Length: 263
Length: 131
Image 1 (cartoon, helix red, strand yellow):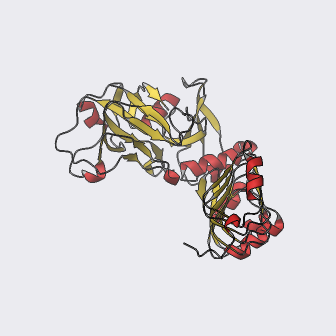
Image 2 (image 1 turned 30 degrees about the vertical axis):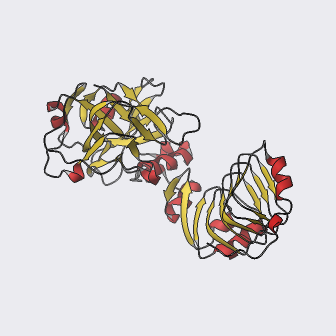
Image 3 (image 1 turned 90 degrees about the horizontal axis):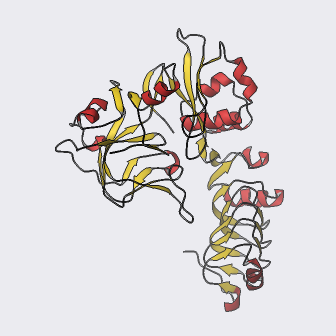
C-alpha cells in the first residue's frame, strides 16, 4: 500500500469512483476538490470525468470506449484505457503497468512513457505509431489476440502475403491476419480454387473448402472456411477433406458427426 | 444424450464412464487462449493428463454408447470426460447464450460426455487447434 501524503479530509475520496453518463454530473461536483482517490476510477462508455485537483489514484484508472478523463494534475496511478477513450494527464510522474487500446494526447503519452518506461505495457493496433515505435516490456494485441512484435506489425500493416497468412499456425492469429488482409491477395495464391461450398451450415453461415498449392509441397493445401455460430467469427482450418461437412466432422475426429447443439 | 459443439471443443454424449478414472481437481474442460477457458460451474472432470493409463480415442467413445458419430479417425484429440449434474452450466467468453450482466456466455448441460478438442489435419500431420 502506498503512503498517501497528508491531505485535508475533504480532499480525499475513500473508495472507488464509477462514473457513467447518468451520474457524471454528481461526480463532477464531488471530485472538484478531491486530490486523492483511495480506490479505482472507472469512466464507463461515453462518460466524462473532470478532476482538476486530483493528484493520486491508489488503484487503477480505467477509461472505456468513448470516455473522457481530464486530470491535469494527476501524478500517480495505474493506467488502463480502451479504444476511443481520452485521458488527459500530462503531469503523470509514476504509474504501474499500462494497458492501452487508444491514442492519447501527445503530451499525455510522453508523460506516461516517462513515468512507466520500465513497467509492463499491453498495447494494441489502436495505439499511436509513436508509442508502438518505442522499445519496452510490451505485449501486443489485435482484437484481444496476442502477437509477437514482428507478426503484430506485419498483420496490422497488412504486409503479409496470403500464403504467409495461411502459414500462421495459431488459428486465432490466422483469423485476425485474414480479417485484416486485403482479400484481393487471395488471387495471388497459386492454383487457388474453391472445391466445395455450402450456402448454409445450419446456422446461417456459408462454408467452403478452398485449396491452393505451395512451392516445395507435392499436394495442395486445403482449408475449411467456416464461421463460429456464437461469435460469427470467420476461421480457416487446415484439412485433407474435399467436402465441407466431412472436413468439419474430421476436425473433431469422426467421418460423420451430428451435433444436437452448436455454440 | 446430446452431442454439443462448443467452439473448438465438442462434448460427445455417452452412456457411462470408463472404469477406474481418476477425477481431476479442476472445473476447466479445455484451456483457451487469453484465459478464455471452457469450464463448468459444477460436476466432475476427468482429464487425459491425469489418467495416462486409461484408453483414449473416438472408438472408446463409440464403445461407451456415443450416438451420431461414425467412423472415428485413428488420431482423435480425446482430452477427457465430464459428468454434468442437473443445473450445471458450460461457460466460455465467446460460446453460448449471452446473459445480461454476466461476463461468461453459458449453456445448461446435463449428462456424461467425452471431450474432444478440434484438430487441424496439416501437411505435418494432425495437430490440435492452437489458439
